[in-house]
Image 1 (spheres, rainbow, N blue to C red):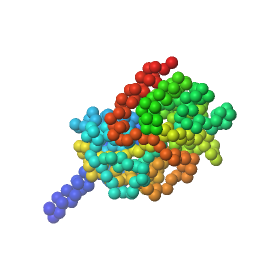
Image 2 (spheres, rainbow, N blue to C red; image 1 turned 120 degrees about the vertical axis):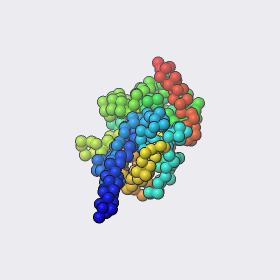
Image 3 (cartoon, rainbow, N blue to C red; image 1 turned 45 degrees about the vertical axis):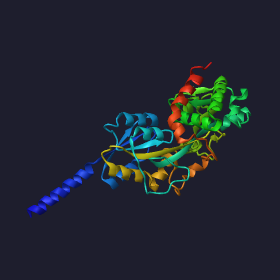
Length: 338
């Protein structure tokens, strides 16, 4: 009887320990899933999720690097293909895989598991162009012509993920020297630089009361315009302008953090993000495409036309040259601005 009681107490204690386990998940500031999904994972795993918002993806990675001797997270979501090389070189990730689902052909992220992908591209205000009678630019070079003076706003690649992605696309599309020559012409043609996406889209873009009808945004932004509109819209008031050399494919992933305290729970969370329920809901919570093949797209994504092609530098080039490219861009566009 005594042994049985001790055994029951031990089992109860183990159960309480499991229920009290905490999984520390570091994410970038745009991470957003319905509370129901979070509660579902906690119920399945018996663990409590502690979501740690690490700021922009680059800032988040820097925090992981600075705390690698004593990791502040067990798993990280939001490191993308512009940062994966830096993360691997810094040794902050435990090589991670998942047997859940099959990747879409274009979604690869060495050392991490792809969760979603999207495209950074130009967006235009359809009504502005209709009223102005100005034809849409057909190439990036058109944007440097007098007819398009003072029409474009971009985000600073030193402080903004989409700004960096757009810079990288121009370098891949035009070649390094060609891209920076183009940026110089753009600067002289009235280019406006915003600190981040929110400022560019909600302050400078004409759709929201600004003066610039062309903005660097996402291929899913037109769908989001329809989704969040107070009116029932048959079509989006904005559209993608997928010019050659002006589209970047971003892949976001999840990985276990090296030295994390909960490796088993971290792997469970990795697989959870690949599950169909999350893959469906991230579409209208984070406005990204599902990385798992076969997941149905949300109906509103019919307004989010996927670009036919994109321009990405290779991963090694992004790892080793991005800092120098951003520094050169800053000297050219910001410090030498008229």
